[in-house]
Length: 567
Image 1 (cartoon, rainbow, N blue to C red):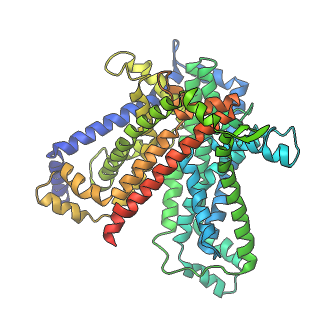
Image 2: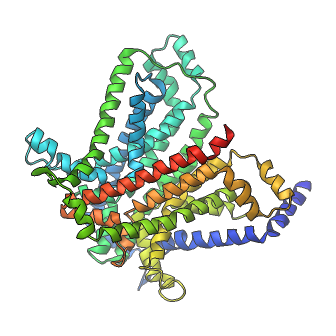
Image 3: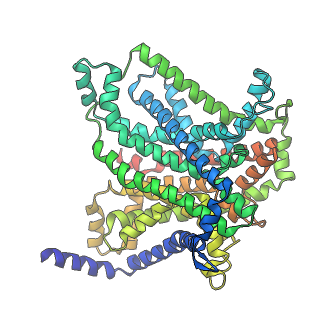
């Protein structure tokens, strides 16, 4: 009885706060309109024709040999990239956490490798791969004298995606390995077990759910990837590129919608397993932090080969990224290696570089603070408030993580160029700057929300309750108490959203109209034409912008962040 009265009082208190209720209503409307509605339209488009409800569209696309081949190709690439990325990520994490590195230089190198894919456009490694190992590649043509080497196709995609995504696995596995209690492993060592036996019988079973989690995250990223298969795939079709070509080449919007539904079903299934099974299992297996410092492996027979292997791989990744600015400085890649700045000059004089950077910068700059604030509001509601639609808000905001960019792009085309909004208040949304900003927000929302939830769970609720007791409303409490306490997470979300927005390609390439020039679309266009000098010049400037943003954010957090206050 007392419990029922308490929950009734909570509800009364909740509905007595108009700002909170309005925020929740607006949030539900935003998530429904810009995440659920485009996906629902795809489903309706796929099943509803002039004949009514039918499976004809699915039968038609399944009869296409290129589509069936694309499904097989996508799954093959996804599984191989998932396995390779997880194992390489585990190797790097194990070396950093367990092996005594003789120099701090290696730790710095690992940190750079883990950060590079975050701050660079998604297809930079594809460009590098072509320039190093293609028919005019420096390594194949000039060092090895191989003149007919082709990097396009299955292996090209697998190598590039593995190098792009393994740092994500590395960061995930590093956190898991650090949380293993060293006493468990030391007990096995004391009983005479070899290092390999300890790893296989103690360490590996503890991190297996986390390893599975890393595999699924990479698998989802791989099958949803559009940029790399588009540039280095050649005639090797994947689902993301087939969907794009179906709408831009065959002008078959309904067929593209059905293909998008197939890709969405695969990613959603994997996301549900990863999010609600493996992630929970991983958390349950590794509860709490390590009780004391770990005794590092100093045996040279282990440290030397592992350090050399990781160093060589890390240097290879760095070489791939260094290749891009050099590609912009050589007169003609593969033929004339005299240094020149003509490609950088042409970016701004011939190819409307100022407009491309201005449009990309402004749209990303508008989207990033909105994304960061929305992420913190959603995190706050999920962690600190109890109301009936809380589960809906959390699930839908995280759903965007499982939706490939190509699928979202098709959903927005079908939903806002036709659908329910071909007339009325939102009819002008399609083709405008607003729809690009909304896509940026939706794509970056899950990352910021996860970061915010982690930060808010560490704050004692009594701090906020004391502000409520002094008469502050929910808006005042959020702005003056909660947000200052999680400002590191807010700033991190802000910069992450900016970097993700300015380097986005998959959904944007389907939605951008000629009135807007975006850097990533320009890079993709020139890379497809084989104009690598211009593509590298655009990519180099973009990397400098994103890397500078991340460095400034780190400096700001170091000197003005919450951590400084608590020291």
